[in-house]
Amino acid sequence: MSSIEESLYAVKERIAYACHRAGRLSEEVRLVGVTKKVGIEKIKAAISCGLRDFGENYIQEARKKIEEIGVDVSWHMIGHIQSNKVKYIPKLFHYVHSVDRWDIIEGLERYEKPMDVLFEVNIAGEGSKHGAEVDGVRRMLERTKAMTYVKPVGLMTMAPFVDNPEEIRWVFARLREVLKKMNDEFGLTMRELSMGMSSDFEVAIEEGATMVRIGTAIFGERL
Image (cartoon, rainbow, N blue to C red; front, side, top):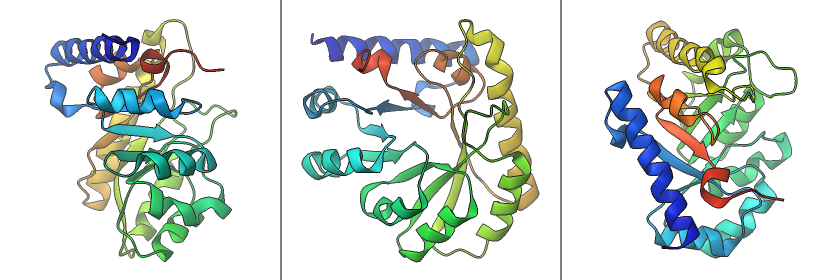
């Protein structure tokens, strides 16, 4: 086995165990390999091992990789979006996890391509992190009803970095509660909860994550 194959196997095993503890099927959780600062050869190795979803933080970096690798896999925009880079997103990505303000929605709609979006919520209220407040998500959802191409499919959050992931279980539980509340309030069927990274994804799965964004545990430490 290659190191990436071994790492992927180990991560998938951990996902399966976390799902078992939560009484869920492992098929309910989509593994998104985070490829920020990861080279093309490693990405291709992961594809050869069966990984089909990849998350990028920076559009400029993603463009080069996607042009070389192609679109036979699903690409997820998971990083903060600059307004002047929105025009690239519909051509490159299948999902956008990090919508946190209205001008991004307007920009995506303008390109007339169906786009699945998740709203990033700053559940922990950290000043160093991006993401809208819950009321901000509510206001965006109210206005999104008039959109033709932008489809809200869920919510995303980044929990604080801690040594013990049990300390941030409440963050994931709260995002799940917000998703239910937004669905009930707007008559929606959003189901995606993008939450959990290499250090905390098992707890996130136990609290309902449907997408986990894993970089280090698959590709190793990046410079």
